[in-house]
Length: 113
Length: 112
Image (cartoon, rainbow over all chains, first blue to last red; front, side, top):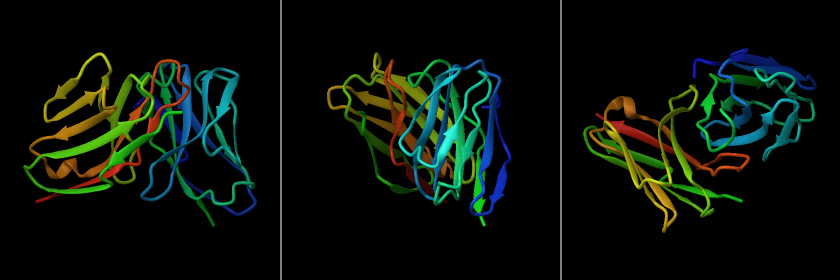
């Protein structure tokens, strides 16, 4: 767990703004994931990447975008097209893929004002 | 695709008693089953996992059992303590699958 960092811890956004959430890992993991968690709810997959310069949409990708230019980094942009972005965002990584243990970052709590 | 159902959604037990959370999965090819514990406002943390080549795995007060024929697996916590209060998530995946599929979560409350 300590090898995955997310920043910022708290983020406030005005309606109509794009914001970017940072996720970095030093575990030398190939695969990285972004999840959204709403209060009292489970984890919903936004995007995932199994290798540098490649990523796939998860179950709720609309209104979000990602990039994977470096193995260590997988930033998530919440665009103005995401109508209800207030949530807890969790980044995770695993060695190669989904059958390997996923380790989560500490999360970013995004609030739209 | 894989679908994971988790029950119950909430569970309340007396301190010292046992707690059991059950999950069923749909993809018979799934072979990796982790359990995560999430405390309020914190990240999910892996507490135990099992692969399909074994039927049971134990770590101190925590155990997981797997029934491949029935396609279900369970988390068992014995001698529960107040610090066991949290939300627990099960998940399932297989080699080559692109994502880990999570259950809906169980909120476990340990009453003193």
